[in-house]
Image 1: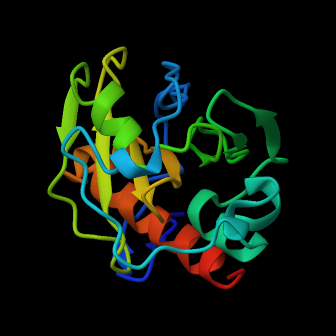
Image 2: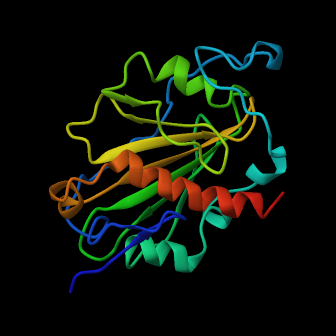
Length: 206
């Protein structure tokens, strides 16, 4: 049976995008460490400014508890497995995988440890990314960028970084499946839709 997945507020029909065979790994974005930058120097490295910042409290705690509702995860992954929390170099992280017979999944990081917001991605990831997408439409007015990691063997996994203030950001790493690839779907565009869902839930905490 073909499962149809609606992605974010744009209601993009993905078909079996997240539920068919795909890459077995989701890259942890921004693993390169960097010394915190003074807010007076932000944004930098070509990153856009955040004009309507959200309070830092929206990124408190684990993404496992606040990034998605149970219904949203079911909509994206069909049969999501148990969330896997971890404390990454960038901040608290959560990884969800599908148990529907594929390796599709979503990884979210609340980037609270570096105080550089979306500028960190421009500085650390843009120079080495296999693919860099800085023409994504803003997510509910907040700047967003996408990239495919240099170590990726294909374009099935894309990382979306959204700046919620000049100092803070969150990232969504989305892995899609064969049907989405064959249909010409773009992992970065679909990832933007998932990031939109996360932002709606974060704004409800402000």
